[in-house]
Amino acid sequence: MEAIRVGIVGTGFAAASHADALRRLPQVEVAGIAGSSKRKAEEAAGRLGIGRAASSYEDLAADDSIDAIHNCTPNYLHVEINETVLQSGKHLLSEKPLAVTSQETARLVALAETSEVVAGVCFNYRHYPLVSQVKMMLENGHHGRPHFVHGSYLQDWLVEADDWNWRLETDKAGRSRAVADIGSHWLDLVQHVCSDRVTEVCADLGTLHSERLRPSPSSETFQRGDARSTERVAVGTEDFASILLRFESGARGAVTLSQVSPGRKNRLFFEIDTQKAAFAWDQEAPNSLWIGKRNEANRELVRDPTLLDDRAAALAHFPGGHQEGWPDGLRNLFLDFYEAVRAHSAGEIGESSFATIEDAHRVGLVVEAIMDSASSARWVRVGEKMETAV
Image 1: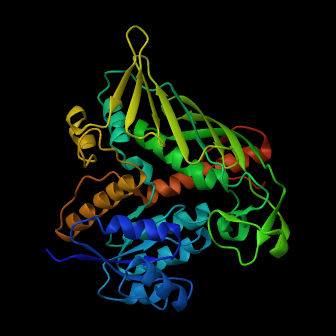
Image 2: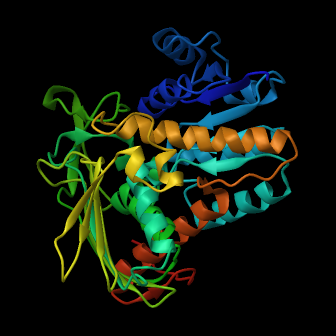
Image 3: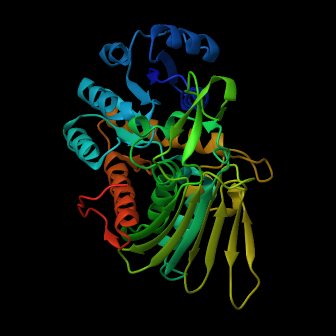
């Protein structure tokens, strides 16, 4: 079997993570990288050990030797790059968000439906073994349907006024920050695990720092300001959020989001309550699943492939006690995606669990409903159009 040749667009943290995970896949070759300039592409190619630095993403899209492209650029570039890749006939795996607005994502959904390619979005938390295990346990129906879904996604990397990143700039990241950046992950994950859709939301948003110190130049994640080389800029997006949820099934939910919670580095947590059991999972401790019971002892299921459902066990690559985490979840996403690419090339239809373009569009609609709810102080149905904006 010939290797699938992959190009990466972007040169930051996401691009480096993608390159690392792709190298762990059989019959996949990282064949090129493009950045905002040829110089940045060359620097990234040297740093990441990639043989070719392209002049632009258009050059990668036009290269007949490239089979698939990973879009790892800032949010505002997603729609134009994703459109170009889909139109080029290459397979596409885009970092989230798919695009900044639902009008843009709807356009990409329509384009993907007519493109003869495999297209997906990097909602990578779907691809942990114990997340898959919860989904299987809910699907078998032995515990009853979920009635309450709750949790949080907490970080602390923007807690200081001199913490800076391009995501703070509305023209680059969009109308929402905490909700769109990390809340989208949580929303996609629980909808996927519960096989249920969020249909209505009621949200309250807050901003810790109305002004921040922006360093010059400003680009890198986790960058700190220096008072000798900064400017004060107004912040127009949220640092934290509290959101109530209603699901299509009738289940209720609640989620807390924050990028200003000291000590919380990347804590995505969910608990799903059914009549017979509760299932709780924490991304910072991903190798155990808490199963709550009323009339018997609670259980802790560890990530041991011999104890898991077959589909969940397939995502665990080492024996129990040999811990796996964030890079392994990303690898599992890519394994799933490129199995779909191989099936597509063979004219087959495989079973995949990665987030589709349509899934990402739907998450974007939920994010927009949350923003509209916060600005109008009322419940908002997902997909409802409003004129008000934050």
